[in-house]
Amino acid sequence: MDTRDLISILPLLVLAGWACLLLLIDLFVPRDRKSITAILAAIGISVALVINLMQLGEVRQAFNGMIVLDGFASLLITLFLAVGLIAIAQAYDYIKRRGIERGEYYSLLLFTLCGMLLMATAGDLIVVFLALELLSIPLYVLAGFARPQLESEEAAIKYFLLGAFASGFVVYGIALIFGATGTTALDGIVASFAATQENPVLLLVGSGMILVGLGFKVAVVPFHMWTPDVYHGAPTAVTAFMSVGAKAGGFAALLRVFLAAFPELSAAWAPMAMWIAALTMAWGNIAAIAQKNIKRMLAYSSIAHAGYILMALPAAANPTVAPEALRAVLFYLFGYAITNLGAWGVVVAMEKAEGGGLAIEDYSGLSNRRPGFALAMALFMLSLTGMPPTVGFIGKFYIFRAVIDADLIWLALVGVITSLISAYYYLRVIVVMYMRSGEPETRSESWLNATVWLTGLGTIVFGIVPGPLLALASQSWLSSLVP
Image (cartoon, rainbow, N blue to C red; front, side, top):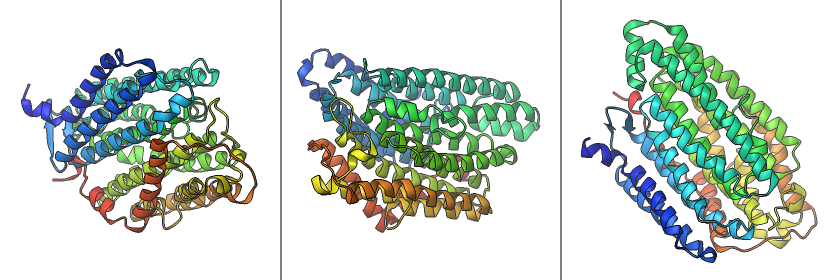
């Protein structure tokens, strides 16, 4: 084993080692002092983040190509670790309030982050599967962390059963691809197909099965059925982390696998991805209209945004548009993470100790009781709709432009029309906050408040001045797309 291999995955090694150490340290932390564990977890993530920032711009392969460190991986790792820090801040007071404060919460969160980091750097289908399981299994536990609350236990078992079913598709797809090409390395698959042009049926079926498995993880139609129930039943702080981290991790693998390993099969999978994206945008936004619970509304919103992100995949199948589409999807993932975490932060603040306060009507009069929170929530809703001058508008603009440049005009029209539909249920939250009377219960928790103000600031700043984030996304490429 080369020392350079270990350096390539140093952020992952730090995070995994810190998570294991945290499990041992937590044994000696008093039950009423679990905040110590939270602070230690945040320190571990911060160290990994600093190391990753030092590696920005480097391109190398490790472990015989099974790990690939490039601009795409480095930027996504930065996103995952930043999301992890915000997730800890949002959970810090929330799990105390709900009476579910246990030190293993933070270790499980770190292990999930390890899976996300591995997903972003995977250069082999075996690593993709290992990363998928490392990401998912701790999340199954976190979804049921509010036991013995029945909704939380139900969310965990549904997520586990459907997640295991989806993993089976991924494994079988990998087996078929190995049978067709004799390798599971992403660069080896494309080289084998280019050299022999054999077994396209096995490759097509195998790639389709991988699309099913990863489609479950990012919650696209028709693999979305778990999302509303799991988002509703899981502790809200877990849902916030899941809605951004797991989705971004799934798209990291989806983009790398299909653009690096199956570019020659794009004539087959690109139309499938187009229709899945269109159906996801349509169903996610239409179903959200009927929701009266804000967690279920944001769950369907999450499904819809998976459709917007997925539009970039068929656009990237066009080699001339691929760099632009990749830049657009990376910017969108950052913008969506900032906005969505902020919206969920307000939901966390509104939730009562016994789990109530989650109906949209419970937000009546929030502008009178907590004008700052109401303003932040209004900003997040406008950003999710895609209205200027928010980061959500810029993200949708670049996604739609990449799709149009790839001559997928009809798909861009579906995106625009469904964005107009989404305005109804997003603006409904603003109407309830500002135009209806009520006395909603709110609370002031310093770490939670900080995440809301920070994400609110990011939503407006990157909407007005997107240049720095766009420049960072432009420099973050898939190594398979550059000479």
